[in-house]
Length: 85
View 1: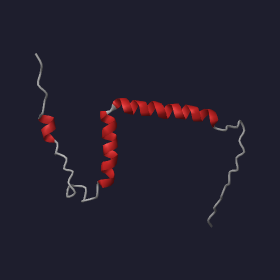
View 2: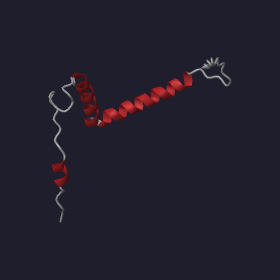
View 3: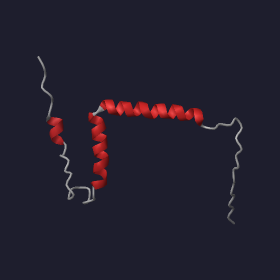
View 4: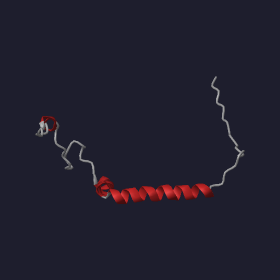
């Protein structure tokens, strides 16, 4: 026997209104829609998201071998001292 979900919590929250005259002061959301489209596409295509993550990690590991490293690097730290009378 299954218990039906409690919908009373969902009914207490106001619904999101994505129109330009909503609570966001009428700001333009066209730039935000493109990033939401990319995020929603990756949310639907989890295999592509995982492949992109693996690709970024592999490229990072490959570039790690080509980064020039020094045990004792030469650092020129310029110090500015300001005194007020």
